[in-house]
Image (cartoon, rainbow, N blue to C red):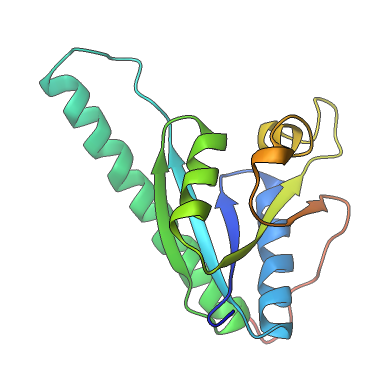
Length: 154
């Protein structure tokens, strides 16, 4: 498949950074691209008109800012220019929708926590009841497998 994309879901966890390094290394080794999905959670303010719209706009701006920061990190780590996605709603649904709407996505990379409290909600879902809904292979990178960044990277 031309222009294959490895999708990673962005968040502010420690395991995300580790999974991002791994996905970048895999993308370079396999001549693929990186896609980064940030998911905007549903608002709790239903039917509040202008307030709800402002909250959605603020969350979208925050998501765009996070994705821009991650894109710069990917460029510095791997030289790749990522494809950026913003999803909304429940996280598993947003992941599946993004993959289904983008046929070049060929793999989903998720960071998994090995600390107490489980590996994380997306890993738990896609390694359990959501596995049958996932249209691409899943790669889970445990947080204890750490790839070092090259010394010449910033």
